[in-house]
Image (cartoon, rainbow, N blue to C red; front, side, top):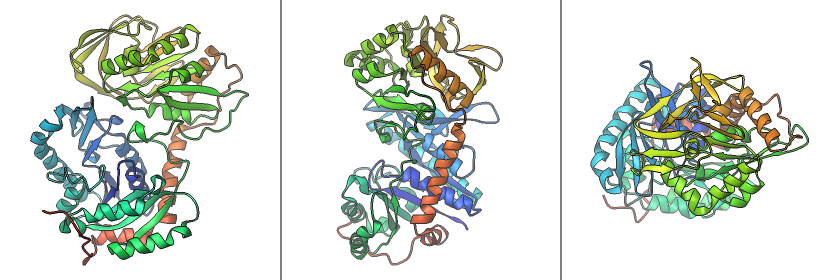
Length: 509
């Protein structure tokens, strides 16, 4: 086998990431040397890779998950361009793992040619190295206002001669109209590469879809390669926090007598919200993302997660009254945890000339520290210990502790302190700590005690790596059981079928 495939979608969050991961897992099981690829991703959920030279680099969290589906470690080439939104009008540009600047909608055009050239070269490298490269598109391939210069969707397919399948989320409704409209607004040259459709998140008897499947094939001349059912175990490693529902996962019953209720504040520029997923994998732990002060009042543990715009999100906390709810929670003796940007918000002061440019800003004052933003971003995969347990994690931050030395929550392998643990207020710059099973259990046990949930008991057998592997296996199973894998194999190996009909009106060149 030697080839590739583009997994496009009718919309954002149609299921491109999970379908890509599922196809990767299926091919990996067949003994195919397969890799994922997304030319450009827009997400604040990222993973860190440290190269042989010790330098760290970032790629989209979804591509790290897809790499795991392929049995591979993350590689910055799997996502050569990552845009990290810092506001509604600007994004940090990460090119091959390294931050190279900030762009707006207007200035992006001047950089696009450089980004596209890097993506083309990187894809060519991967295709020479792997038997198959499964590419994920972004948004919709029919972003007709952005088609000129596109190098993520049909621009990618055109450059590399890739067949494309289009995924639609039937749970939202209107999937057949979305399929037809997606195809009909593409140019004849782009349409010639769109080779079929996949329906995602169907609930019920798939036989009821037959009239719709037959009609969409009749009017487009392209088959539906399968119908994937809605599955509750597919929720880990979301590309964007908006993909989450209000409650993360489907928590199992408590191991002890009581539940532990965790409220994660859904910041406007929330970053790496995947930290909360390991908590949600614990039986008896109910994790909600929220913007409601009432949910903070009802929670046992409150988590302030990472942020791509720490100072702006801190102001939002104050504007919404969530800061007062958080203070009341702490005053009641219940635990509060800040992670990365959330940790920085807990400081007495923040000096930021880098992200917001606002200089000295008053923090929440819940930890006796000061934060200063450095121009160079810290990217690392540290190891050490916390609460008497071994801990590994990853760091992605500009802010550094510049004043204060409270009791640490963690220590690096060389003994250097990290984070803070002051009474019932905790903070750390490390992401991913809760993926360490023993540390997670010890932290939750301490948090439950401070919250007065003495009937809560951690389940000793929960292994987060096993939970993640099970989710990837579920994706592979869904592809094998519900998609026409023979048709997918032919597309990957042989490319788009010849003679696919044109669907009017099409888009002009």
